[in-house]
Image 1 (spheres, rainbow, N blue to C red):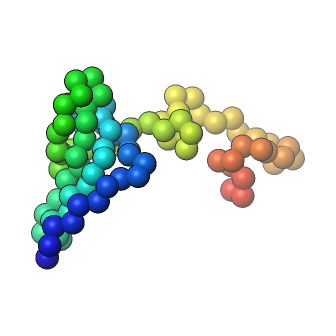
Image 2 (cartoon, helix red, strand yellow):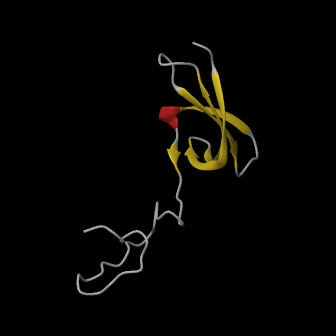
Length: 89
């Protein structure tokens, strides 16, 4: 199988062993290999490549990932305008 390089658009914020980073590319060498993430470390601006088990997705406040405080629980009788709770029981 050929190696596939995918440009991420938009880039993803990740937590890496070297600190917070922004991933711009994925490298997939097939099913027998890990996916590699090509990242730029925010603090040092260095470019590093990390194996899939070494990274974690960073916080994303817009999508509600990693909120420091839980979303308020709405009562059933009150309508909610919170996009994270619409359509959920």
